[in-house]
Amino acid sequence: MKEIARLVFSTLGYQIKRTTIEPDHMIVAGRLSAYPAAVLGLAASGNFIRIVIVGANDGRINDPIHETVRAHLAGRSEIVLFEPQHRLHPMLRETYAFHPACTISGAAIGPQGTLELHAIRPEFWSRARAPYAAGWPDYRAPTGVTSGQREHVVAWANQHIRGLRDAEKAVERLSVPCKPLPAALRDLGLSVAIDVLQVDAEGADDTVLYNAGLAETRPAVIHFEFGHLTADRGNRLLRFLDSLGYVVWPLGQDRLAVRASS
Image (cartoon, rainbow, N blue to C red):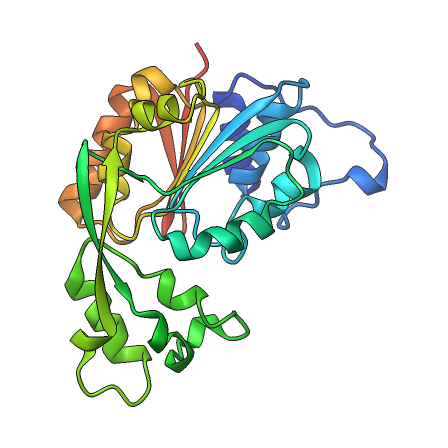
């Protein structure tokens, strides 16, 4: 992890030097991953940074950047949260109530048009028992598997919802407006230029990134889910990011892409 962090900062154009700092401000190795470290690196020179999260869910549970924003960047950032599941917007507003420059949108990011998503019906949320979600509120795990791939959601329902005879009945269709990221930001009256892009789209992360207008939005740091992509889709996405000047590092099932400093 130390080596990845060193390479990330080097790619961003920073040099890492040993220094003496107050204990309250120390970042202990192993407690801060390369992604939050890269985001803090962008803000290190006092810059106001713009963060976009696609697939925000409730903005808190299992979110890799929330605590960093809350602890260090509340007054030094603008954050835009895209979450097409409108039922989650009250949770998002509560999560980011501390932030003075937060915008929430129900649009999906992708090709212009309408996106059909498949989701667990709310009446089945309390019956879900996913082992990885112990202690989570009942909405979090079921809403976290919402996807454009119905078979993926049906399979999850079969595995994790108790007493289910027909998994199809536990899954509903949602039709949501879909647009490329630059258009979505303009529709919100916001600048297209961003610094950080975080994507968690349940197997559609490549589609989001292809429609993120990266040559125009130019995020310095991108964090995205990689583990749900097939080998062919994953390799294609890595070639695409490389063509735009991004260096990509593995972070478990996720990937961290950093635009090389010119």
